[in-house]
Image 1: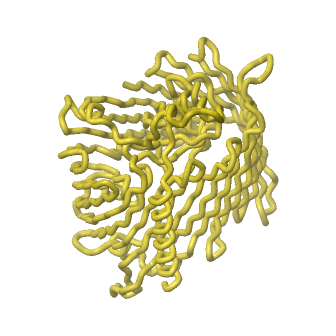
Image 2: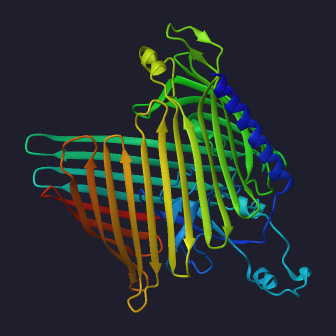
Length: 539
């Protein structure tokens, strides 16, 4: 317990120092911006759409969030005329249809930099990376949204499994020029499974956001409904009210409501929670901030969890992006159910994204976690939870390097450790990508990786070729992947599995697109067919 308190105090002091440095040395760049949206998400990449990608530079940072609160989220890996392949950095939880931003130097400033004799007075006035929107923009009614239908099916000789997902995302800002805004995000899931003897179907509906915002003025706002507060990311969805006030460089807010039911994700008024937070902005555009908050969560009127959290995000100059968060539990019980005045470090996460030179981007992250204990929700399991409560530590490092204008390389290392030596995992991977292939055009992506846990070692290698047709409306990507499984300390044969398939994307218009994927895999002389279909309509 004492060590966890020391870690949390150190973390608080460390990010307080970062906040001071950021406030004192905030750097603003003369940059223009171009906006795009998330079109598709996989386990490895995030696909984006822009009206044009002419100004985008590979390995640059792409931001997400509201204009008043932009966060570095992605690294640009490859681009075509309107499409971008990017990889996640930090802890951004992006969804299909979310808006993203890219910042670039205006031509006048770029020319001034190239000319040593340029008169500084001719350079446009410096503006922050993320500026407050003007009153004209704020008063303008704007509707953005997305509807997508997805189906994922796997067929073999005996079984058929299908998963269908429908998503709706909608944001209406300043409805009819009023002070009201609305946003919602929901998902409908249907699972179907069939074999020779059993057939099953399950249906689930998840409402992640359904909130109305009212802006009393540019500094005071009220939110009602189900929402996720960017200043309280660790809390998750909240059913209730949020009131937030901002000043020139300080903000404060409070929430009251309940937590969604952990099983059905429906409204559960037995899970009341309330809290408050305050923080400091480090830039005029409010893209960098540090905030400290307090949350008390209950179950049927009794304290379930009570904790402090600290969150920090900032950019030191134009080359370093930082994100950190920590949670310190203030409420605990012993195995007999008696309350104790002991603190417990539940979560500590820190990530840094550093670009020392134009062609090189480095990312590292470190996290420490313990079991999340809700003393009332899991009162019957307290003995086991308190007994089996190891620290889990995660380390990640990634480097991306642009060898030439058309060749990109990189590697990634991740390690998960646990104080009881269980559930440990390691991964090492390399990639080499080629764009604008001579004579045939298109792009080639290659990667190899090795993964190991306590009972299995498996290696994989893949190659993908992508090319656009029909004025970039149609994209075709054939691919091949091979995996080799080897069981540790067990007398079992190695397993070899191969995947061969093609990925297709067709844009009927700027807002309507179709994506289809098919692959055939072979494992232990058994074949599997996989079909993925996605239709997305934006508006």
